[in-house]
Image 1 (cartoon, rainbow, N blue to C red):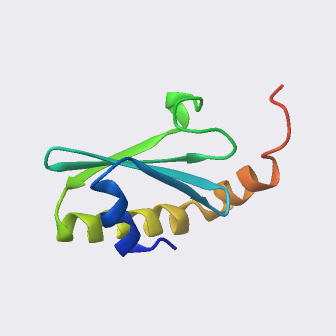
Image 2 (image 1 turned 45 degrees about the vertical axis):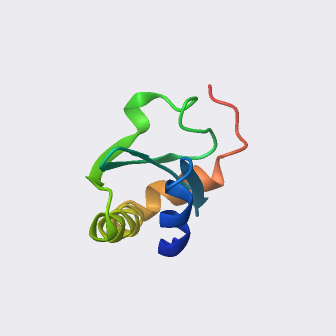
Amino acid sequence: MIDRKLIHHKLNKMPYSGSYQGMRYHLSAQENTISVYVYPEPFNLEKTPDELKIHQQFPFDDDGLEQAADWLDAMYQEREDYWQEAKKNKFRMPD
């Protein structure tokens, strides 16, 4: 789902975010920790309500990057129906 080499290169300089099939993700590194968030489309991390975000932290090293990428893959697989619904409704205005 996500290019692990690109994550490492980008996180050294700035946060990294993207989306996959309705699931958005945001990774940022501070000192020795990677913070990873997943949340439904369509908004960015700041505009998405906190109750819709799932957060996990990993060590900022090669193993931690691999764990973060594996976690992202698992989050998509575990909630695939949820992400697909978010993708389908991303242009619908909230009630």
